[in-house]
View 1 (cartoon, rainbow, N blue to C red):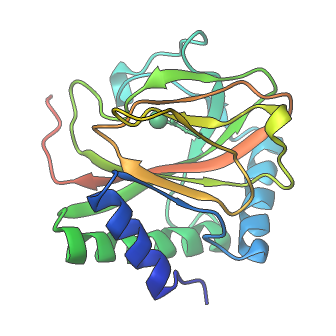
View 2 (cartoon, rainbow, N blue to C red):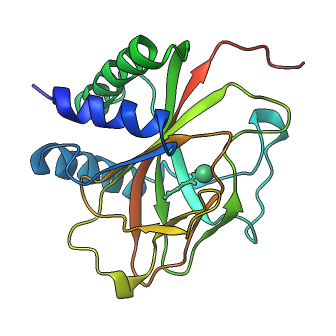
View 3 (cartoon, helix red, strand yellow):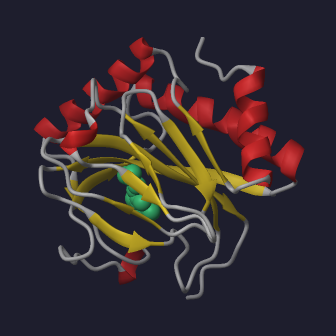
Length: 206
Ligand code: OGA
Ligand code: MN
């Protein structure tokens, strides 16, 4: 069964309550991470991943100068392996609610593929017109990533040096969506991830 250990869950909660971001280098087993990577590649080969937009739903616009990844949202029932990931993240959602009283209602996530050279400019994950995203969680799906290949997630915590995270297979980065500016640096190789957000109840302004 795929589970987080008690100490992983505790570490993530403590980190979010403290600095506001958490890194788990071996969050998932290698096998599970590889299965997710294979699922992402399978979807890419089928043409299911589409150039991502900037902004929310209907207002989203493709702006290649800002972000250059191709994505597909996970929906329950698409594949056993993606369902297992959604179930796993639901256990993290429960723990965040229990320990930090965040009132997280759901988790939305998408596979993302950055072709060599693609990047995502510095941003925060909360939209101007929708503040439901509370906690961001990115799982990386790339074997044997080297620093010189670029592609780091660069976090900009307030008052300290920027922190680079390599998109290494099985690494999970979790951070508070509203407070932490970050960017994805261009890489020399294809870069796969599963990027998601725990959301609070809220009203979309229609
Ligand atoms: C995003 C994002 C980070 C990453 O999709 O909003 O910041 O490392 N992704 O893929
Ligand atoms: Mn982001």
